[in-house]
Image 1: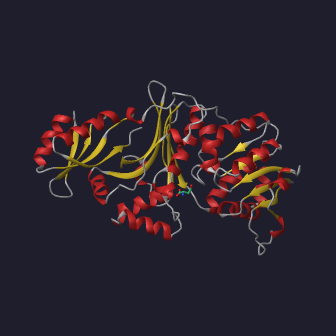
Image 2: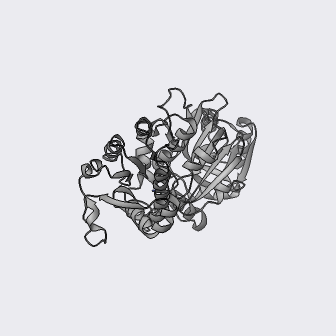
Image 3: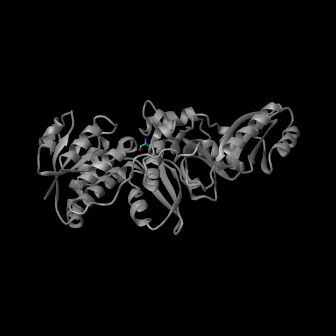
Length: 412
Ligand code: HSE
């Protein structure tokens, strides 16, 4: 019997205990050993639970118990999760976490100590909840050179955008609904401003590059400024607006990584991903595009990924699983102005004929659509660097054309 400890008995932590108990027979068969939760660390008491006697409040009980071989961290946040995970590794215990903030900020340090101590530090649940993505990138696609990863990595924003698209619900109402349904926090910044998606694309990019990519080095734009008019124009261009975490390898070997709302053509399977679902598209040179889809959050989907990692730890107690990235590399991340993409621009002036004439002068080639309001049209520009696209927007303004909104399109 392998003894484990679970730190945090919130949504995910309680789900982990529930899945381990509910599916214990199948889990034992697959792990080839039984798994027992010896301790649960939480500051709160849960006297009503049948396993109330396993709760402890002091991390040292876990760290000092040699019987505990695996520690599961479901507390969230960097502190004290980092100290507790580091302490566990230094005490010779493998660690499994669902904490994307911890992995995005401290992944290299924790992986290094895990490697030095021949232990596992696994985090399948940190990206995409129940969707298998870390293991497929590291193992199933290990033969590939991966050139791009594009993901809908945040369920809350995808839910809000879906309501805007399918029910013409304004952003503020859709956010309130997401809060009422428990998807969005009272303070929704991490979701709607793109920081949660940023942490997740950083983890995937770090895995692909083998170097730590820090969220602070990544350009991030959220969805607060998306209007129902933008949504209507996307439809006219046979596209849908999605918040995309994007990682691409440039021809010079440096990488492009950012989070931003994008017009995604309906020819891409990402355009059809609705509600709270997540999807991640990975481009390998041997596989071409591979898509992963499913529930990116929630108690049991996330617990599913955590428990799978626990099983993997049990099966890899001697030879650790190879999962590692080095420290950050200076100069690896290219400036976001270098990204090559085409842009959607919503333009307004005294006459639409005049806008078309100016657009034809400023852009090599562009696609037009009629305005959803008088004196407006929208265009998709020819591809060029983001710096060139900004210059085009400035030239429109200098010629008296108001650029009401602008947004990148997705090309991989
Ligand atoms: N707030 C996140 C989301 C939860 O909406 O996707 C999972 O990380």
